[in-house]
Length: 207
Image 1 (cartoon, rainbow, N blue to C red):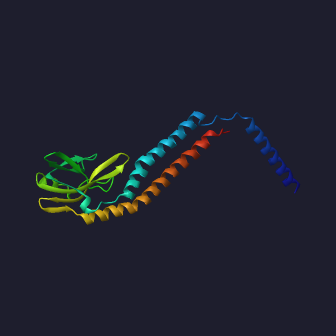
Image 2 (tube, rainbow, N blue to C red; image 1 turned 180 degrees about the vertical axis):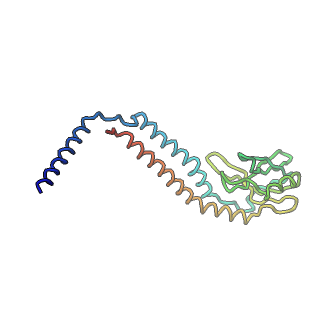
Image 3 (cartoon, rainbow, N blue to C red; image 1 turned 30 degrees about the horizontal axis):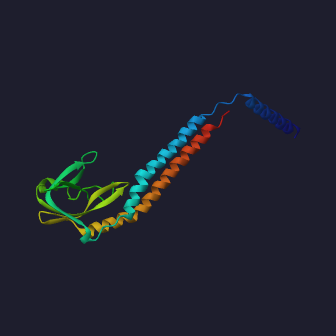
């Protein structure tokens, strides 16, 4: 018993000595300075602006999108053509050439929807030059930004886009928009929380 008490006392004295020794060592400076912290938090604002500009606003426009009644749509008649778009040239912007000039159209549900109105896209080459009738309206897709949204398209006497189908697609996109807004908000919050936790750890001095 005495041996155990002496051994315990010896370990206790050693642990106290170790602590004193550790406390006497100089502290390592924090990993981040106040300037780093300021830049970090400015980064949060940039991320927030990115979320608002790329995620929130376009999805709100999709959420509120509503197809006008058929009699309120614009009608343009002319020669069908197209322009290639997209990073890899995978999209087609529908072009109608009229006596007053060219009009560009999109069948995309919103800002980031594929604009193609004819499927498959290879059909654009075959149908170019044919007479096309387009029923459309000005669709807001972002702040101060609109697109000529196709609701119904008839090319060479054959219907390529249908009014009822366009209305149903628009409604489906509108229903999914709030979920996308929520998911993107959660994603943004998780990123900021992780960055803030890392920043706070780096602002503390270490032994």
